[in-house]
Image 1 (cartoon, helix red, strand yellow):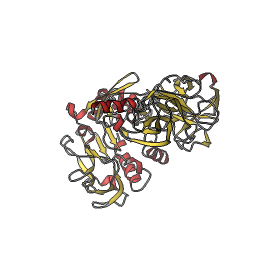
Image 2 (cartoon, one colour; image 1 turned 180 degrees about the horizontal axis):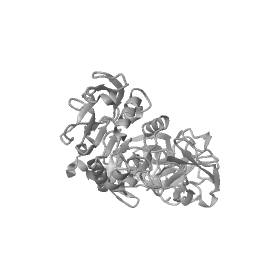
Image 3 (cartoon, one colour; image 1 turned 180 degrees about the vertical axis):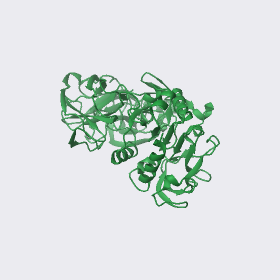
Image 4 (cartoon, helix red, strand yellow; image 1 turned 45 degrees about the vertical axis):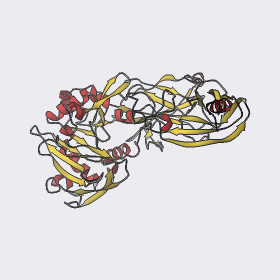
Amino acid sequence: MLVEALTSLLLAPHLVGVRVDNGSTPFLGDGRYLTTVSPNGDGFRDAARVHFRLTAPGRVSLDVLQTSTVKGDPEDASTIVVARCRPRLLQAGAHTIVWRPARRLAPRTYVLRLHLAGGTVPPRSPVVRIQGIDAGFFQPSFAPGQDASLRVATDARTLTFQVFAYGGGRFPSVHDQRTTGEAMTAAARVDWTSHRDAPATIDVVRPGDWPSGLYFLRITARDGRVGYAPFVVRPRKLGAHRIAVVLATQTWQAYNFTDSNGDGWGDSWYVSGRTRSIDLTRPFLDFGIPFRFNDWDLTFLTWLQREGKQVDFLADQDVDAATGDELARDYDLIVFPGHEEYVTQHELDAITHFRDLGGNLAFLAANNLFWHVSVDGPSMTKVGQWRDEGRPEGAVTGAEYVGSNHGALQLPYTVTGATLAPWLFAGTGLQDGSTFGRYGIEIDAKGPASPKGTIVLAQIPNLLGPGKTAEMTYYETPAGAKVFDAGAINFAASATAQPVSTLLENLWARLSAP
């Protein structure tokens, strides 16, 4: 039987010598197992060609996979089949399978998995990068008068650059549908011919008297490709307004599934536990728009604009560059509208000291101040959970992270604190027992570390199972600090709807008072 098994193994077909190319000039970083294509119909890098050799006749097929999260072995990971090349009976010798991606397929990397009936294939699969327009700034925020540089990667011949502002632009008739921004600059066309084979750095804007806010650089090509790169314009000097809104730029990058190293898998610890560090300067995967931006952040920005709120916009790194004393000097209220999950030790120290000095805090999502990260230049590394280091998030936010059901079930909040905090519910029509909205995904609740006197304003009982309840909380300190925690990650996503809009207005009035 051993002889028969060896004979069968020797006679079985083997697929060897696998390599991939685009039939044209490689882009920087391409190699034996990685090729870059741009299926725009111009005859340049329109298709991927997988080359291999069969040692004996065999039936070969090819699956094109969009990867998701790794649960250990990449072969057992979560993937979606986006295209299939049907099985073909091939003779022994050299062969090529050509994959021509559809123009509508989203720019990202895809794994090409070969199958050989009754035979063996190499353990490593080739990867194809469908290139759109990838762009990322070297830092998340800029002060007025500061040059803003970014790296752009695309093989388009010409590019058009234009900055869009959320909250009013200088060319209100020019509107961007994806970001809902208005043009801040005129469109500028740039010849990109000499950069079709490698990324290039370009200085694109130098904010002058632009108001502090969130901006998007939009880059378009004649073939319809588009890419975005977000950046924050911070005030020339902190404290231009007495309220600061901190955008969760570090969390944006933690949830960025861009595959920079070309292995077919997103470079994020949400893709693989083997990843501990990420690049804060890389382009965002979804055409350059941060993860869930349109779901959550955009609604709160709409509320700010609609209600005429004047604030300083800051990135996480701006908080990391300030001290608690400076924050307390410059601001009465700091608002964290998004998922402020990843903070450095200095950030946590500054936020905590700001609170200890009487500064007011509003956390409008959930799972805030949870992970300890270190930032060294462009690299952010996950260190551990702050609660495991003796600094539970609830000691500052008032509520601690309970868990997530990834949105499988969302339910209304039930008001429990209308008599305890009548100022919050004034004008909303809500009273104890009233319900509003639908919330969940990730939730917080009052816990052992919550400061003395923390009250529960509303709750979603047993949302994640028995005892796993979402709770909206509020507390005040002897130093005069007032701290609000929404208790659900998507609370700010309802900012423009009633009764939440009025709740936010009441909260704003209470916490912005010095």
